[in-house]
Length: 251
Picture: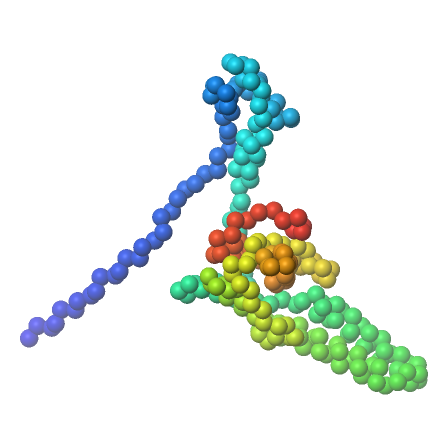
């Protein structure tokens, strides 16, 4: 008796998006708006953004052409996914998981409270109990609290969920941070600033269009510039937001 022939279902091909190699245009030919003749380089005044046609002697502005060349010359380099960030696409959702780092407040607490605790303990014992015992106890508890938080940061994560309707962010465990949700169609732009807590970290902000005007909301703070640029890049790409310069951005 012959063994049954195994039949394998052919693998289904996935329709991949067409890859387009688009290279920036880094040159611009200037044509006279009056006679359409090409204007030679010697007749271009780049400093004052004007040109003179040698054929019909018309003088005209070339500010728009100069702007186009300057803008196309700014090639935005793609940022690759850094360690500590995971991306997952499911149906119409973009799920981002970010490994949390020690926050600015925790850094200061981790530095100050152990030092103050040791100092107050020394005063209590060497100063023959000249201060209340509750002072070194309180600072010791605070120092232990921040050390414990720093130790557990390896298990702390922040989750950003983006789809066509909203962008939500939540941290687990919360550490007194509220879950936040923003309407996707109200997000106008993302930009990066140095963190205001002096930690040397980087904060990502959202510009939200509202009835009362544009509002700037801090989305998340990360410990490296590559993480900040990658998150900005991927969220803007998913929401089809064209990246532009923002006056408040300082990175």
